[in-house]
Length: 185
Image (cartoon, rainbow, N blue to C red; front, side, top):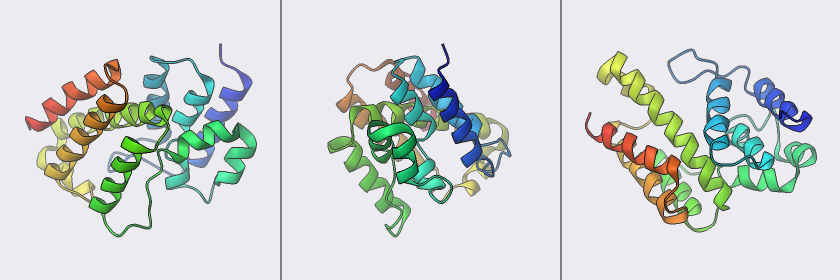
């Protein structure tokens, strides 16, 4: 059953990401957030984790719309802590530095709930990339700050970290399957 709190989180996420679209697609960004929550809901019905899945990019992408203090006040320390475990350090100078720091944090420090959401997030991203590649071909890589080889490395590393932190996770087995398809491009 959809609780008032989860409905509030869904509306909050939609409102705070209302001006965003998926890279190059025109698809409202909220579709990605709902998709990640859906993937996570296949593994858990823990409302805090589902809410954190909705907010997984909020503190990174739109902190001016919904700052950490407000998230903490409205949804609590646990939700905020899980989201912080997924938030890249935007003070680092380039893509590779941010990726390395994120992987290190996910592997050694982030709550396991953050690892679960990272897996769902990257699985949905990779499914979208593979779909877009089928339509756009190599022109797809113009959307990204990194090329195909860096993206292939990135998704393989996420898959590795998730397997280390959550061995046997069904979502990660699917991510592994998609990573293999991605490497075959």
